[in-house]
Length: 238
Image 1 (cartoon, rainbow, N blue to C red):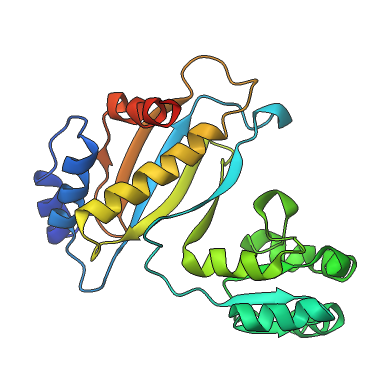
Image 2: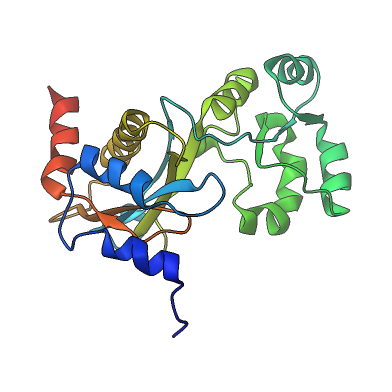
């Protein structure tokens, strides 16, 4: 097992072995961040689902109220009037279906998100082996295949993030940057967790969200009190 660095070990010593309240955890995340760059703040949720069963798959999207702190390069694939709509909405790159197949097959991957109109998916399907493993394949379930392509672009630029449970029943997500004020991290955390709660499949039995941890890119994780996580759902129902 690799030896932890001195700064990481010092950060661990500042984290008590107990669940933290949400506000307390976000303040602690900022306190223990030690890298010389603006670290990403991440959340990890262990769910009580078995993703091997299709009826227990959990996936969705959420627009974080304060964004992710990242500037994403959006590729829009469309034709006709939707091509112009994508340009006007602020897409960084706009291509037709044929153009996208040619350039991406040739190695062009200078983008972080892809949106497309349904009519060009017959072209994009050929790119599944390239875009799929990178999490970039457009999908109507996440709103990235849509006739409202302008709206989809604006949402991504505003901080829309996608989540999907992995084979170990864990969902990972980004909720901002270490430079964010604690209250903005709290808002983004509540929005993200609320979206995961709303995506609970009917087939899920027992405790749905089993553990929640937050951490920066380089720092140790902090456990969140599940009682506070439950209150997020209760507040939405009120």
